Image (cartoon, rainbow, N blue to C red):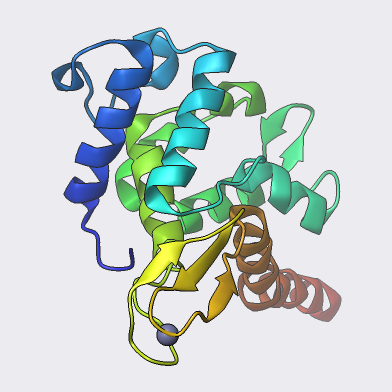
Length: 196
Ligand SMILES: [Zn+2]
């Protein structure tokens, strides 16, 4: 569903969470954390599966930071359990400005787990992934329906596509960030040091 607005995604996601935790959707706000609503690991698994089914997306297992650390290698984005300046820069580039205060001062990586369980963070992640799920067939314009696994099938001509996983899309974003944002800066720093 490429054209869903943030508030449409929020409403639908709040319904999923409310049903799973047996609470009222009105108890859920973008600033609420799933764990503060009483969600435990099994609830999170249920919420994840229901979200994937209803939005036709494939959520990543790892946070964007975990994927980024795999691409960057150790000691660059986090050091001794804390985010480095490079780590903060990457997360701020990925997450909107409204969240900048989250990364003020010393940020322990283990505290980010809580941050990634914020309803608003999920809503933005869902909205981002939903862009990659077509509602119309690229070949004939017919309606796309859910097929087996993470596939979609055109109801008109039968064309089938495989949905891209959140993990794959995260990794792609990190690689691009590394090449276009991080490396040029790191190289500029090295050559500046070499001149003096
Ligand atoms: Zn078609």
